[in-house]
Image (cartoon, rainbow, N blue to C red; front, top):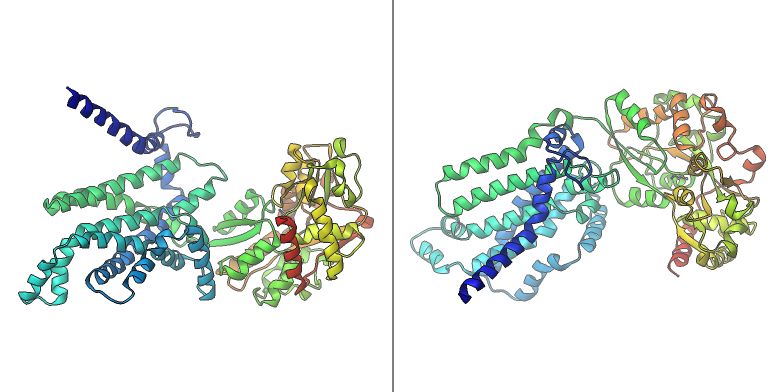
Length: 606
Ligand code: N2P
């Protein structure tokens, strides 16, 4: 009686444990058939998400990439791992313990450390980020697991079998293939499956080393979080789950010693499902022309991108950044395959010095004639040999009049009455620029004493600052969380449309001016298409559309007449000449840049 009760309790407990493990998967499978778009509620059965999947090029491509990488990593790791396990198992040598510890080290090293060191290594080796780097990275983190798993199997392997084979005259290769390998096959298979699983779901390391064009499924899903995950993802996951279960079933049949034809059916079905993305989207996936655009956030509307895609029958990958420094870091160390970048004036000087920009073919840019000559042939790129202006603007203060009264000086950003209601950009040159201007200095000073004073001012300001943010400063102001925000004019002009209480001012002490341009890096894989894009943005109608959607000012005289009067007369977008004269262009300061960076880091970490 007691024993039965115990057995029942045990059964119940195991049931609970299995439920705990599998419930999330079951829910996922169920919701892949859910009609509703939101994952929370059941709204009826549909196969729609699976059908949608069939022509989602982005998801199919990334799934295909994931499979290629996982397959390559699995083959390499299993061969290397088995060889290493055999060597470690068979031979005794000096420092063996140290060697074994080193083999397992990648298992315990935090992923983020491995990721950043791999990026450094690839940059040092001059290896462009792409497929190869992803596969190398996956091999480097997964091979240790293969060694460990095969070794465990070897520990139980009867050595005398190999000796018997040798006694009977089999050479080392024959012994390996006919005796050893069949003996350890389950271990090798387990190692392969483990490596495959590790590779297919890696996010952290892959996101560091992927570069454009080698996006894997996890990286793709992560980037979809921004625009909302659809049940389509549940459908992909379900398919992967079914396929891998079928393959596991085949492996199990083989291990049980059942005839190969029994294993053939599940194996074939599993492989068919995994092979679908290769067969399916082929026409759409392969051979498609791509433009890789790396641009500021809030700088181009999806509809503008779509127009370009339509006109030239191409796809545009858009990646975003929020500071010139982030752009520089990526372009200088990453070896990334972007076709078009959008730096401000001063980073153009830096990129030019480092020979990272491709000379433009001006004959392929007929719409350059639309550009206002005031924005051409500037010091940072004489003759526009490497850049065409995209938008220009200023960095001032936007504020809520009902809360902050009327503001006309940078001093407002140091006013204790606004404690906790101030936002500053997360940008060394702009925050130091504000502090320097406030005290009546040039924002291009290299004078260490002036910079030290500006740093003191910024540290003193810190308790008043609610947040340093260069991406969503306009939204934070609109939401009412802050009353005064430093920021670039376009995004402020945009929220002012919704909120008459918000005003934009260029402080009386002056402010920074920027001219952001499109450039083509030397490493661009599609320079011809890049020229088409540059020229496209200089068409009058497109330049006007960029201004209408983003509210940043076009350096394009042909676009101005196409703008509605309320934009043309908005002083936040087109400041009057006497305000313009108070603006100063940020310049490249050479060596002194390091000083700004250090001082700014100190402000933020104090
Ligand atoms: C766009 C920021 C404007 C860039 N998010 C200023 N150079």
